Length: 106
Image (tube, rainbow, N blue to C red):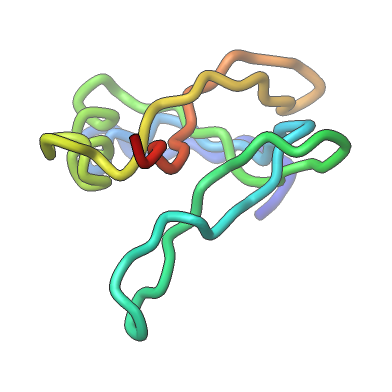
């Protein structure tokens, strides 16, 4: 991925923009158990002091976000993910962003 913002066509996916980003004091974790051996685990983000989780910051339309949430099981009675607000650094700025974290087992 490049360091420059990428504009996407409106309407097709709900993605308006994507830029490289990092979330400090978090790490990428594959801790959402799925269906071994085909898909043993899905990605999540976890708090981890001193670590840095690299990824992309997406700006979505409302409909695009709803479609993403449903595609990740958000419409289920007990979704596998829960929304988590994090501070992401992108393009020299810090912004509040929503990411998905593996839901607690409780």
